[in-house]
Image (cartoon, rainbow, N blue to C red; front, side, top):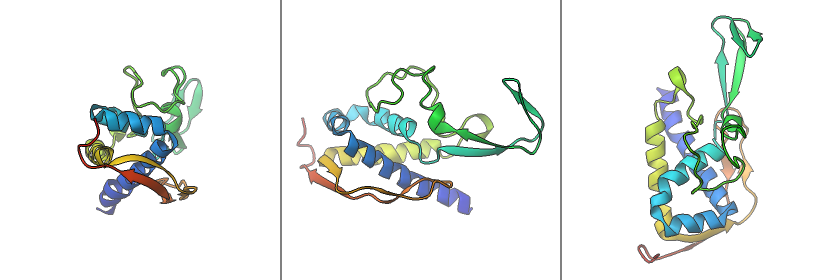
Length: 176
């Protein structure tokens, strides 16, 4: 039960903090989002693709496995890196550019895992991030880092301990 609670709270809080940091570092993207709220789902996808808060996933090999002529015996611990997979030059154009309006084609986002190990809370996580970014995009015109972010250790959820921001608010519905 604690895994479900942690997975449903800590991860989304951490991913939202990363989203705000990314938009503070890319103010032109925030401006684009505030002017076109229809980009909220694409913005969530781009945040999740660009910098997942769970960049590594450990898996235990149950039976001998061969991948590209490399043999992994049963019992081997493998680490899959969603961050690297989401930045694959062979799959995406300009994968190291944060752009909420980029056409990423049909590239599969691996932030939530895949197959049998796909995150059961992925749809809820997306919905919560969409609500949060949509809410903020209506109310915050600009924001910037007010100091350096302080990161947690990258074991499990790689969150932020501090994210100092300075922002300006708008009257709801005042943006064109």
